[in-house]
Amino acid sequence: MKPTVALLLFAAEFGEALKVQLRGGSPCKLVIFEHDNFQGKNAVFSGPGVIEFEQFTQVVPNDAVSSLRVEGIPTCRARLYQNADQSGWRATFGPGDYNLAKILQLSTEFKDDDASSAEIFFMGKRGLGL
Ligand SMILES: [Ca+2]
Image 1 (spheres, helix red, strand yellow):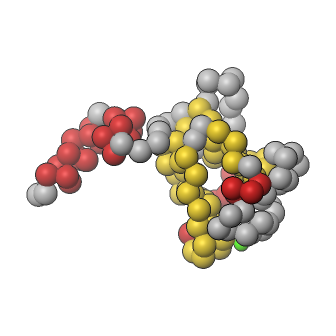
Image 2: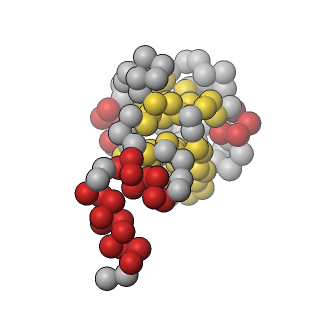
Image 3: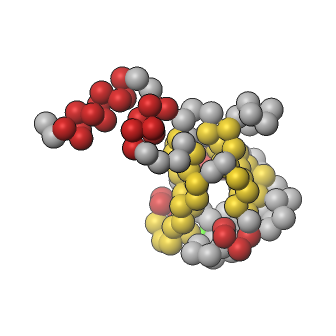
């Protein structure tokens, strides 16, 4: 077994937060995909923070998100918004992989090919839940 693999397995024993720290990455990331099932163009955003329209649509076109992934510690949340100014419908996701079927199962608001901005935050720090 390679040392890196052993280290990650070891880290998994001690929780997602430690694993993220060992990777040296942001504790909260959002990956958006142009097409369903994590296909097409994709863009990675690190948080916490607001992902404004200009940044959100730099790689994946506006009104195109059809699947997404959230990576980070358990309190990590990514919220997608219908409009460029964080208004309209909103849909919030914890760490996990979400194809379109799963998104629509979890959110009655999200619309395919309609998201225009996002926000990454930690649940609890702003008093925001799902
Ligand atoms: Ca799409």
